[in-house]
Length: 101
Image (cartoon, rainbow, N blue to C red; front, side, top):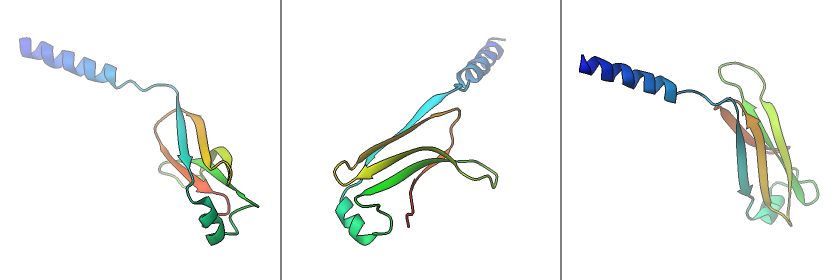
């Protein structure tokens, strides 16, 4: 009888702790090092001295197109960036370069 109570209690605790949050925030912070070398190697990607990055959500299990969540322009003078978005669930996310290889 005691063992049954413990098993039931553990199952209840497991289900209660697995509750999913409604929303959260995803933030990607980074820095592009040697941006001058990248400009020389991939001149078609850079507009003057800047590059644009995009944050996409990649939907699971379907042929749906990725959803653009945020974008940022990174320059040679300011090579640090931050991309963020409100998200509802865990998922697969991708950072892409505009006109990138």
